[in-house]
Length: 420
Picture: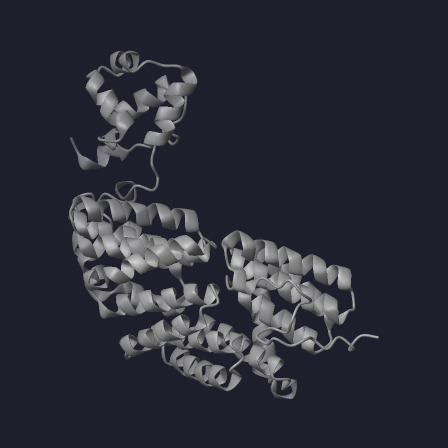
C-alpha cells in the first residue's frame, strides 16, 4: 500500500457521528468489509490512519464528506513526498526559525515546514516539527491550533522518551497559556519546564524560557522575579540580536511599570539597537511606541519625534498583535489632552485585545483614566471595575484597583483638571 493513499482520521468526529446516527460498530465492519477490531482501533485512536478507499466508504456510512473525517492537524496530512527528508534535516540543522523570525513572516515559515514533511520521518524529527508548527501558529495568534500541535509534540516526546521534544512542547503550551490569560497554568507549566531546563538542546531555548517566565511574573506583579529572569535571559542570548531585542524590550517594559523610567529608556535603546542589527522591522515599530510611553509618563511630550508619530500611524493601520501598544498610544493622546483620539484608540485596542485578557484589563484601566480626565466619575468607575473583574478572575489581586484609578506605574492620583 502506498503511503500517499493513507489519510489521517478525526477520531473525535467519527465517534460523535457514530453516536449521532446510533450506528453499531459491527454494522460498520460489515459495510467496510473489515475486522470489527479494526473499527474499534479507529474509534479509540490506536490506529490513526486508514486507506483512502476505506475512508470514502466510512464517510458514506456516516453520511458526511471525506473532509469531515480527515484530521487536518495531523502532520502526515501536510505532505507525503519521499524526497522531503533531506529538506527537513536542512531546516532543523540551519535553525530556520531563527533565520526567519525577524521578518515576522510566520505563514511563510509554516508553509516551508508543511511542504517539507514526509511520513517517513523519524519520530523525534516529527516531534520537533510539531513544536515548530506550534510556534508559527501562536505567533500568528492562532492559539488553539498552536496548542494542538504542541500537545501532539508532547505526546510524541512522551511516547519515544525524547526529553528535548517533550520539554519544548511543554514550553510552547506554557507560552500559549500566558498569551491567552491562563497565567496560573502558564506559571505552573513554565516552572515545570524550569525544572527540566537541562533537557533543552540549545541554550537559547533556556533563555526563551527565562524571558517568558519573566513576563508571567510581571503579569502577577512580581517584579523582582520578573527582572531576575529577564536579566538571566539576556546573559544567555549572547549575540542573538533578534532574541535580545525582545528581551531588552521586555526588560524596559518591566521597568516602565515599576516607574523606573531611566532604566526603561536605557533598555528600550538597547532593544532598538538589536532590532536594527537583526532587521526586526516590526520590533522597531513596537519598541518605538513603548519608548513613547516613557515620554508620556515622564511628561516629556516635547521630545516625541516624527518617527514615533509615524510608527503610531503604521501600528494603527497594520495587523499587530500587541495589545499593550494600544494602551501606550491611548495614554499618549490622554497626556496630549486629545481625549477624542484616546477613546478612538481604546476602542480599536479593545477589539484587538479580546483574546488577551490581561491586555484587555490594562486597556480598561487606561479607559478609566481617560474618563477621570473628563471628570466622568461614573464612567471611570465602570471601566475600572471591568478591568478589576478580569484581574480578579485571573487571580491577579495586585492589579485590582478598588479606589479611584491611579496613574500607570505610580501610586499617585491623576490630575484631572485638564478638561473644564
